[in-house]
Image (cartoon, rainbow, N blue to C red):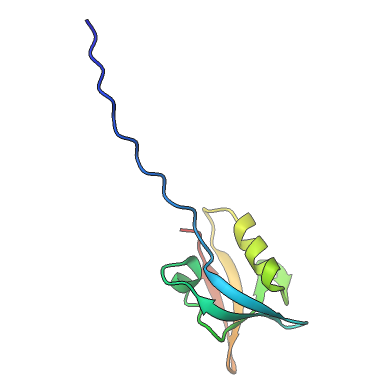
Length: 97
């Protein structure tokens, strides 16, 4: 005689979301218009009004390039993002979690 008990499935965590609404500023980068609460961008400290001037190895990225680089990045390594906030320039770590 054999008895089986079904175990409940562990919920699959939702995929990491970048959480940015942006517009492209030609030859400069992508201006952040909105940041979703709880997103990877919010956890990295990106705020509305920031301009993403580099992400990974892409300089002056378009809004689409920012999204594409984030989606293609491995989940186990932080992605470096350069931003301009007013007159300040910062480099932040963007993680997919």
